[in-house]
Every structure is written in structure tokens, then in C-alpha cells.
Image (cartoon, rainbow, N blue to C red; front, side, top):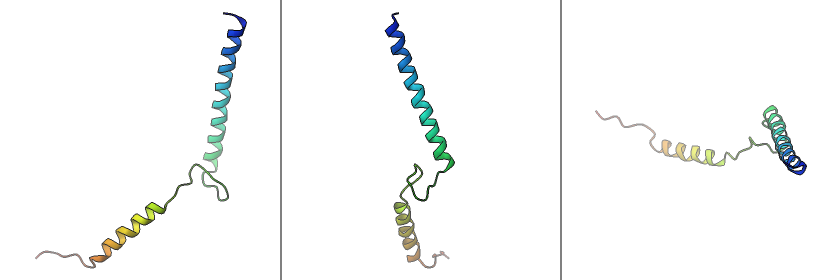
Length: 71
């Protein structure tokens, strides 16, 4: 191996380690404060589809006000 091959290998490994540590720091920060009130977090999701499903199911169940029990 030449000296430049060692440098390239060390550069790739150093870059990988740097990106891994930065990812871990960002992950720890996000886990420490998962629901930011004024910012955007990875835990922010849209609940509109869940609310629509709830209202649709609720409206369907209210149509049948009393269950019919066969005698």
C-alpha cells in the first residue's frame, strides 16, 4: 500500500464515524425532547385521517341507536 491509499481509507472511515456520531447526537436530542411545541420534530404526525375515521365510525354507530336482539 502506498501512503495515499492509507490516507483515503482513513478519510472514509473518519467520515463514516463523524456521520455516525452526528446522527447519534441528533437522535439523542430528539429523544430528549420528542414533542417540540414551537418546532418540527420527527414525532410530528398528521392526525386528520385518524379523526376522520373516528367521526365516520361514530356516525355509522349512531345510525343504529339500539341494537336489535333477536327473540
